[in-house]
Amino acid sequence: QLAEAQKALTQFGGSVPLQDGCKISAHTLSDLHALFEAFDRDGNGYVDYEEMKIMATQFGAPFKSEKEAMATFKTMDADNNGRVNEDEFVTWWHNKEHDKLRKDLGKTVGFSSDKLGKGSKSRGVMFG
Image (cartoon, rainbow, N blue to C red; front, side, top):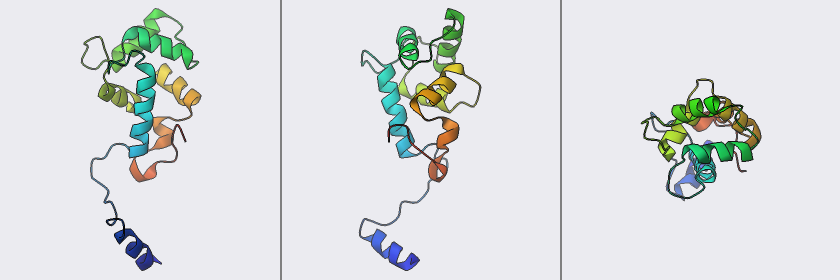
């Protein structure tokens, strides 16, 4: 069976080798991209503080206080420039430190960094 599978793969250019250092699968990245775009309401490629608060509320995970919202935003905004780019958003999502918004979003949208795993250990995707 293995030989047949390998032969079939050659019709499509062969197998894709796992790459060392790969942090997340392509499906996971596309799901996080879609989530980032939902947060980036004005489409400028960044999530600002107000967009984060609005989307947290719309996804059913409102902040209890401005202090809680600001703490989460500061965690997202790694370079402290007042806006979060997509790389910062993905890094924040995969950060293992406790973050209420990420945990609540994981429940609401149906995935989390723990559920998805990494690479071949991925067990699901957000949007299908």
